Length: 172
Figure 1 (tube, rainbow, N blue to C red):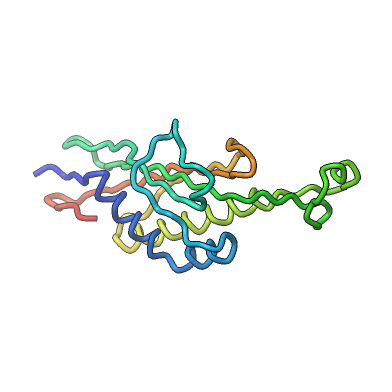
Figure 2 (spheres, rainbow, N blue to C red):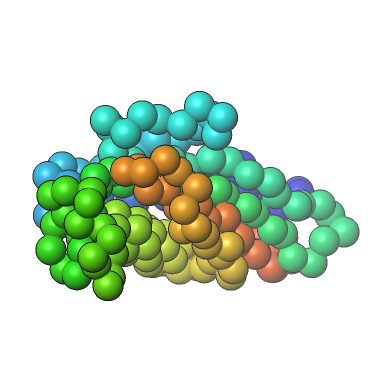
């Protein structure tokens, strides 16, 4: 029997972990006054609107399996976004765009929040994957501003590599 795991099985397991994560719910409630919406499947060309932020989207990626492979590889994509229209000038919320010229430090809190939420997402997924015996072996993580202010987004591709034993039936 060939070793195989459907990508959807991994994605569904991770979605449940994110949905029930106390740390993610607490963070989002404190910063955005609501728990995040967790979605399975998404259209990267038509991202959800800012009015449903914060949100987390899990998307099946690729997998490499086969009888001649010693290591099986699974990729799952994660996208998340937050909404925060605040701009801080020298630590004080901006009330007038003319104040920008006199500031020595301009901070967009949403840029920090998207990274903080991303870290919580990664930690939750890593704990879930490790608890199942197949930890995430690598992530590609990006919070480079690509969204339109005041929406801030992040992406990560999580890779799990599994080395099955002879005759093992894979479960996740």
